[in-house]
Length: 516
Image (cartoon, rainbow, N blue to C red; front, side):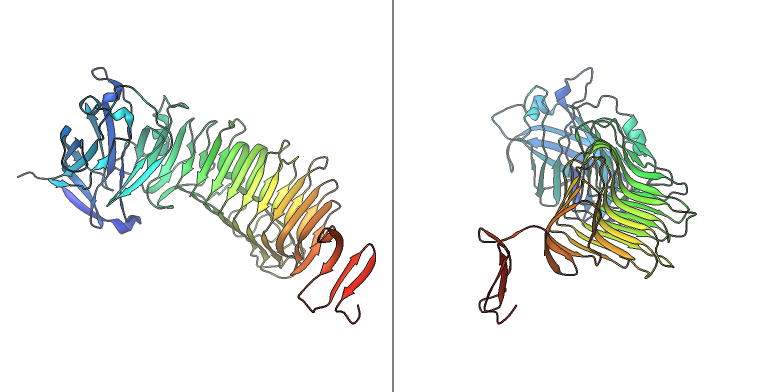
């Protein structure tokens, strides 16, 4: 009787509810076989609600039908799974054995005598059936029974895990790749655990966490925890946690050498927190086109500093195009006189900025009255197109009194000409000594359409303001001419029979009014 070592791990411990079976196709050069004749398959194995860890007999068989049919390839392999049930195998000869372009092929996996039904259809991948190399782009995901099959656009993958993976550190996995290119991109798959590293990315190598957001945690006290490469380097489903003890530490850095390709930070959790006499940055963006989407972002500073520090979540110093889409951002500052800025663009050559559908909280939480400056959006460069739309923003000083200042937007571009467009945002600025929705300097323009703003001090600055919005505490304000039909005038029309007063050509006219 075959012996095997086996132990069970509760799946709920890792917040996973499905078996993830990742099926990847890689081109591997060997002396005795062609590059298209070896496939690398990897996945995870569980039964019920528990991961299976141990040694098992895997039978990989490829059929020409979903049920029944003829087997064109079969191989029995003994595999030992890791702590999370992960396994990996190289299968040789599939392409030469199953190479009829007129047929569809289906993979059956049998583990210790039990078929993992249903079979998985493989016919969509031409290079399984042709004796030629082929690069397939795009992403395809299909849920079948207890399996989630993920076809990635990257043919090359490497795994990182605390045990059972190709590598135990993320940096060593990245450094092992020497042939990544635009047409040969890699993904490093990282299994749950805590990784204390400061990672320097490499061109065309992306990072992806396995499991729910937060289960793969990259941490440290010296930043940056991740530096983007010049090309590619996207990060997905990861948590980064920086707890600095020295000042000016940044969590994520995109250097000035970054290329023009889009760099993505998607479904990540990013935390910066410290009680030391320090200041910091979560995103230092010096160049490139950057998309940050569906992330949880937190910046927390407690305690008291010597003098005034300025804390920034986004620090844009170069020619960058940034899109912030559907993120949840919480900022809490405990020092009485520190400044805080959510998005600070001080570049000399501005790019386009889109800030859409985010939920943003900025709190000054001090033991005494706040005397610093809190700003949500701060544009000091020669900006490109700046567009803020559909955000929910709460800026609040939790202690009354003091000389603190709260501002939703400040625009002060070099030489004037800066324009910020704000549409359909809900903004509350309260609790500071002065509470402004906008501050525009000479030559700059702030445009607001249908924002719902509560900021008792309204607007400030010598710049221009164009608005048709509720600028403070529910009052609807119009900076230009209100048109009744195609006729310019100012009117308030509540309902039929109510008093209606409007100005037309400097003459006051009324309807249904006894006096006005």
